[in-house]
Image 1 (tube, rainbow, N blue to C red):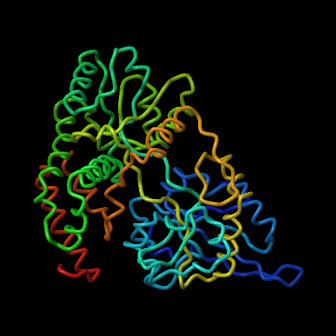
Image 2 (image 1 turned 60 degrees about the vertical axis):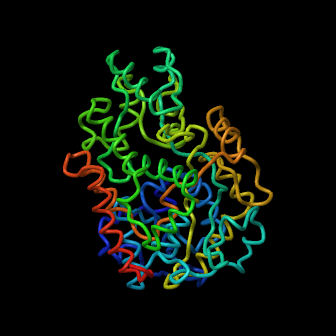
Length: 432
């Protein structure tokens, strides 16, 4: 984001409320200047650059010269609590960017944000359903129709040099790991210092398991009809991940290495696989244009190799009820939801637009293969996180406890079961 277009404010504490608000001044024509604050996590801004296209923001500021756009960045691990605190205190930013289903559950957008169902941009949506909340209203705008996915990101060059095929079962996966380890290559790079990185493993694998084997399981968990530690398949997934670490198929420093270290680690040739998404692959290809990287589904459960796990709708923009500049925020969304702006946003990153009249993306070979093989054919399942009604940060911390040797996989699930019940009670859900 160009600083002359959008000042960036790093928010490191939920107490830093005033950082998102600047005093008004008056232009020569008598129009009051407005600072329109847009708040998001660092992860969302990094992973979904088209939603924060600097050229689009420049065009918006040119059309509305009295409005200055300011981006407020929150640390990933603290983003949810910061936004919840601001919403509860009546001091939110003018726009907040969050994942759709999580926003409905964790931020309670139906209660805390403006109903946008009658805004002009809604009439030009290619698919209204994907933005529709459970109560039938539309509370936000997102540029895309979800594509891509999450899985095992791998170095194709290493696989080709070692004569390895993409594993389709967990036994085949372990055989690949053993071959790599025997040849001096660490099979799997675990960047688990950030609490959110390992959860891509569970959110993907558990999402597939429930979709394939127990479609009502999320409802049962959310109605306290079953405990997290009563689901053997969840423990199995954690045990398989921990055993990779314990058996030397991961580096010893999993809790010291963060997500940002992936390009260097995976480009070194010392590691063959890691957790990630299509965005991770894209970052690797950009960082190492002389190397080949790709992704395959996690082969943890039977049949999982046939499906790509997709995340919930990312980067949806909402306007809080207590925002200072609601009309300017509506102008921003209606401006961005035009074909011209979607086309311009494609320059930042390719995506399938949810705006009628916008051009289709020009995918490269990698993105095109994912789209044709999984997204277009419907061979996708939705990640676990999309079904959760509370903040999952404590669960992610328990994952770190597991890799530190402080909790067994079973103890992770038992600890989360207690915390989950407390969080659901605090939010007033029935049966807790």
